[in-house]
Image 1: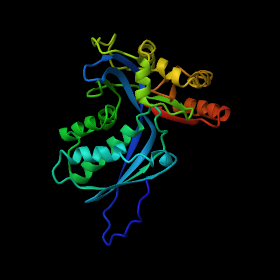
Image 2 (image 1 turned 90 degrees about the horizontal axis):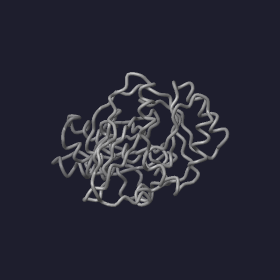
Image 3 (image 1 turned 180 degrees about the horizontal axis):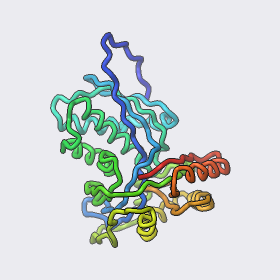
Length: 299
């Protein structure tokens, strides 16, 4: 998204910065398709150390500059979720101070990591800081939900059980895991995955089990083992390379759980700690240099 050179400010306003962590769906159940067309979900969500970074220089006008590895992919999108979130909040807060955003795009795009939603949530947090809005201000949540179904969870920014289409959030105690995130650089559109799921409108079933909060990694892994990602099968049909990603992660020492996040095509593996994850990440990256591989922590 090209930008004209900035005119230097005589009295520059200090820039504000927020991280936009990757959202990882440790489980994802699709409970039905609602009459409004949205799907009813139940998902245990965690956030990774891997993140984009968003900076805001407050001012009267709204603008967005892009940099980082993902910038070329996003340049053609005139309705970036950062801008959409800012407009949604401006529609709800009279006289909202806006400004110039700079997005350092590090997470892969269309990868099932909620990268765009995390960026939008970071934009809302920055605007709240610039305008003196309390984090619990209901207008932030309303703007988040209007921007996208994953944005409210990213605005909360902590492990939770996400329900409805994303509007129901219950904070959840989750032990820290080492993790490796792997994307084979194959983008998958979320809409295409839901079309492949082919779920007709109908009754909404309840979740088969509700996570109780987990005091230990063993308890968390035991529960997650029986709670898959219902979007993984249709995503595998669209991106057969996911089978290779799964095999590569499953072959690493200490991998407890290998699964796809969101609508894909990123898969993750969970480990006891960040050291085990770092070793596993180096193994996968060495064997598959064309893939995006990131060792991190979840929790």
